[in-house]
Length: 206
Image 1 (cartoon, rainbow, N blue to C red):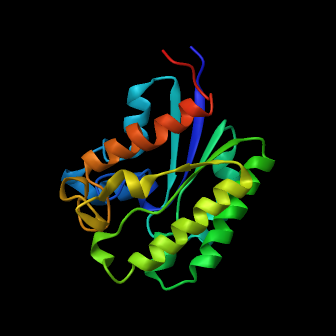
Image 2 (cartoon, rainbow, N blue to C red; image 1 turned 90 degrees about the vertical axis):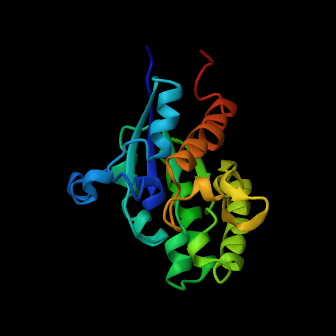
């Protein structure tokens, strides 16, 4: 059975916070709350065992920090998922700079011959309403990057946004005000990531 290696590069949303982390020492600190289903990669791979996700999420990293890890993380992969930006917003960094960092990562992935997918930024309940305008501006810029570079934008924001409370995740989809719940991660894996892989023809239907 052919395998498709997907390198998931990003911050704590890729890592699976707050109940999972690819770093074993971080998992030890999580302790009794550990749950491997707290990652969108787990749910996407559960839908098709041919998908081999490699989780390269690091808690708290900005886009410039994520970008510095791309080369090593992309080695041996077929697909690169680029995710990041909320920590730039949280630290008051210009969203235009974050968008250019995302563009650089997308371009580098394409130069390496990878299929690249770019995720936009989730709603941030704990940062609402202060951070909402910056998140929306960054997401508009990310959409432009995806369009310019010819890659698929993964609609993380729309997948978890509460229609009744725009700018926030629905209560059942958020865990701690910052990160998705297990159900939120399920939605990201099944509804945002898998359709992009299918559309790009990166996997065949079972």
